[in-house]
Image (spheres, rainbow, N blue to C red):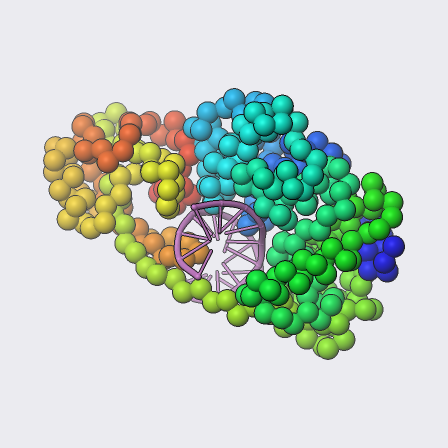
Amino acid sequence: MSQFSQQIVAWQQSHGRHHLPWQNTRDPYRVWLSEIMLQQTQVTTVLGYYERFLQHFPTVADLAAGSDEEVMALWSGLGYYSRARNLHRCAQEVMSRFGGAFPRTVEELASLPGIGRSTASAIASFCFAARAAILDANVKRVLTRALGFSDDLASSAAEKKLWALAEDLLPTTDLSTAMPRYTQGMMDLGAAICTPKKPSCLLCPVHGSCAARREGAPERYPVKTKKLKRSSASWWLLWAERADGAIWLEKRPPKGIWASLYCLPVYETEAQLRQAAQECGGTAPEPLAPFLHVLTHKDLHLHPERIRAENPPLPAAAGGWYRPEQLSALGLPAPVRNLLQG
DNA sequence: CTCCAGGACA
DNA sequence: TGTCCTGGAG
């Protein structure tokens, strides 16, 4: 086996993480659930959601049979809600296409909703010891530094080259133990040692052969020129409350921001909000403190305004009156939950 | 407060 | 190639 993969495997055994709730199992359902939650999301955030989700849905069959409402409520606050919708669809496809057992190959796994090449490889290597490479952001950092790979990862050709290099470096022997350890080791190394800023090179198992360290500037890797520009938008949120304390919430459309979540009615302008408030016979809107909610590509300036009303605003979508104690069982975007409960 | 990290899909 | 969120670090 290559020097590199041996060092990663040995380091994972002695210094890697071994007690995360989704480790020490080869149950594809649990591994898959953790990998989807961990996409774009930090371990400490996932910890609180993972156990609760498993309690509600102990098996992939339970999840497939669950309702959209339950799934979105359990995901509420984790962000990137298309992951939750794909998770649900994926469970249903595992039942219908694969008889309730996750497939064992990267190719078949990646054919399921929400599972891309890297996540498919993670599941296959953890659960089935497949010789498959992952290439998430942590691993990109580790590999570009170790190899001194300076091509711009904004280009798909560079990305393709790095995938090939990642596969070249995989363990070649003792795969049933080496592959899960190697995959976990690459994740742990990127998360704990080979960090974006101030990496702890002295603690790294491959520091002796790391090109970036030899060059003296590991933080220069990975190279990516992609720059995102953020647009800006303003939304007015109508907080209509009945005398009994119930709040009117609407289900968002299945595409776009906060897709399929419950939310206060949203208006593009304050005039539209005021018209809606008037039409339902509510009191004069009382503006609350506006606040900023930042998405990857958009600065969302949110302007909540509160009214008392006994009838709903003309609904743009299906909605209902919900009492405060019911909110925890609803899929709400984090800023709306904070507004209503904070 | 600002800045930043983190995959899949149309 | 643009679209999806949140939390943590500074």
